[in-house]
Image 1 (tube, rainbow, N blue to C red):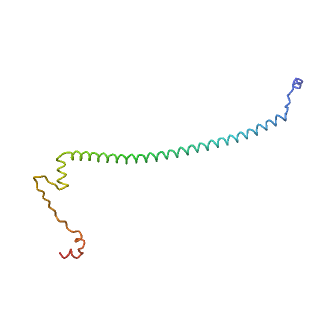
Image 2 (cartoon, helix red, strand yellow; image 1 turned 180 degrees about the horizontal axis):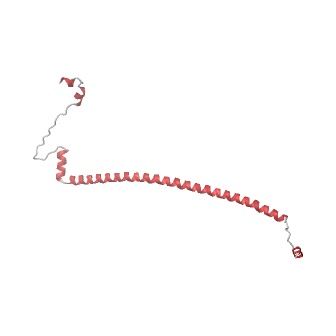
Length: 144
């Protein structure tokens, strides 16, 4: 039995120097590929951050535009309402001016006119002169 173990051949490891050089080349190419991958990921991260910054700035600008547009809408609505009220008043005035009674009322009140069989009496009450009131001294109030 001892002889059978001696007859067994154990394969020897063959060292191939060229294969080792190829392994060294692949390990150096792996390190360059990992560094290029890192640079690639860094570049993509920077691009992503720039995109997020652009989205944020756009959102802020859009919100400010919405606020200013809402303020303009409120202002325009008030202007429209005032214009509608003025138009209604003007239409009422047109209707009043087209009637004979409305024209008579305007002639009597504003133009101080009367009809043929009427007598117009205007009573003016004199207004107190404001200059006299201002010229009074402080002691004049106690004398009277």
